[in-house]
Length: 259
Length: 258
Image 1 (cartoon, each protein chain N blue to C red):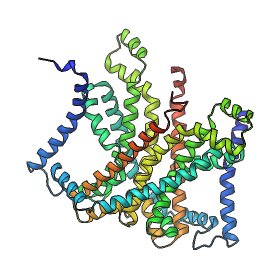
Image 2 (image 1 turned 90 degrees about the vertical axis):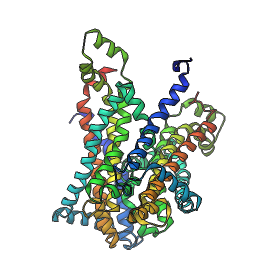
Image 3 (image 1 turned 180 degrees about the vertical axis):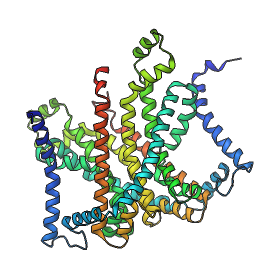
Image 4 (image 1 turned 45 degrees about the horizontal axis):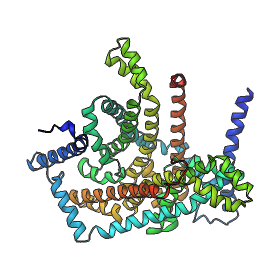
């Protein structure tokens, strides 16, 4: 009989799957046995069924789309503004002098506290949420790009300069590609921030989306829907994070810092 | 004052200058009428509002309420996270059992847990503290685990060769060697605690700085709202600085370990 030790990969896979399965089974068992109030703590199978039902009848689709597009729009705007600004800060003295302290001070501050101000400025609807996501994501984008652009090896810059490359062309054709690894680290931080801010702003100021769906489920005391929404939010966060990681591998295979 | 201290202060001032410029531009725009009060009150008004709140003591009970919530959750998370992280690094079984669970809750945006915990634990402080603790736990556990796992084998061997008991090794070798990573995880947890605190106080609270921001924003008292935002930001910044300064004293010896 072949022993398990002959299949290290199988063992590794089992050790990953078994604990989670055990937890889920225990959850199911405890709730089915009636030891806890099923209204407050429903069996995991019922949550899964509710999730599927919400997905199939489309209740989940519109909020999912709302949260997703807001997060991606805010993130996209933060990349579009943050990357040029970070590059500028990394290569131009006065830009570094002016912006670096502002972004260093601002990075750890809780931008979520600005929700009421943004609602006042940009209204209750999507714009205020997208703008807040943009603001919050801008900080990691600028700071990571800046550190990438600043830490470049001079040799690449010299060799481009010696061929008469202009300053603007230099930023786009030399500094930007060489900073990409660092920029992608920034994107991976910002993706997580984008989903978080989207959900929190929807929870606080409504306007559909998964955050509001969660709050509504809470008001109705509907734990199954709350769990299904939470699962969806987590899946979005995880999928976007993985997508950023995958994109990084595809786009940066040539990168000098990677090899 | 030594020349080194002088250049340190000169550097700090040069870094503050852009911030002062932005505030001055804000004030100038307000005073010239370019920036209507309905859009944004002037910096002077915000500062005056903050001064009034501090003098009247209105902000004090809210500060204490927020501190109690964030502090309780953060404290539980740091204590539990360090114990759990060390256990994971030392006991194979614990690592195998906890790691998948950790991977499962890692991608959850923690404020999204607030409504669920409000159903379970009520809308009071207990649900807020629990979510803050859960959110802070993740970075502390991961950092502690990585730190304790990455301890230089040489240190362990040399301790064992002298007959140090495993328990003593844990206290005298593993924990100190993992300290820099643990410290970084704890620093992340401070920032996380503030974000989850504010989110939870926005969603449901009758005290706390998040509640104060939200209720001033709701009645259109923008100067008071911004005053609390700035106060909260300053508190967060101060906490981070204090933590770093304390850490530097605590770990003055660590440079020798490398």
